[in-house]
Amino acid sequence: MKTLFAAIVLIFVGVSTNAQNAYAPSPVSWNFTSKKLSDKTFEVHLTANIQQGWHLYSQDQPDDAIAIPTSVKINNNPLLKLDGKVQEVGNMEKYKDKILGISAHQYSTKVDFVQLVKMKSNAMTNVSGSVAFQTCDDKKCLPVKTVNFNIALK
Image 1 (tube, helix red, strand yellow):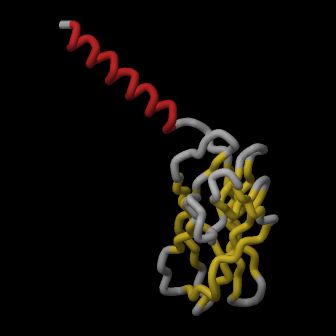
Image 2 (cartoon, one colour; image 1 turned 90 degrees about the vertical axis):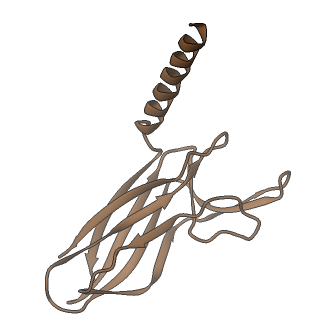
C-alpha cells in the first residue's frame, strides 16, 4: 500500500512539474513582419525581443561552443524564391568562458532575423515556417523552443 501511495505521489509531482514548465513564460517574445522593398521583393523579419538577463544564440556558433544555435525553417512555397540566407541584425556578443574553455555567439535584448524573398508572380501569398531557439541566463538554459510563424506579403 505504501508503495502504491508513493508511486501516485511521484506521478502527481512529475505531472505538476511538467505542466508548470509547459506554461512557463518564455524570456523571448517574437514579432513576425514583412517589408515590401519593390514590386515582387520583400524582407521577412523575425524579431526576437529578449528579457533582461537572458540571451539567445546566433545561427552560427564557434567550434568549441556547446550552445544550441537558433535555426530558421521556411516552408516551401511555389510562389516564392528565397534570396540568400537568413541574416542576423543585432549586437552579437562573443562570449568566452575561460574556466570551461567554451565560446558562444549570442544576443541580448534584441535580434532581427531577416530573409529576402522574391515573388514569382503577383499573386497574394504568405511566408510560413518556424524558429527553434534556446535561451540561457547566468544560471540555467531552457530547453529548445519552437515558434511557428505565418506572415502575409502585402
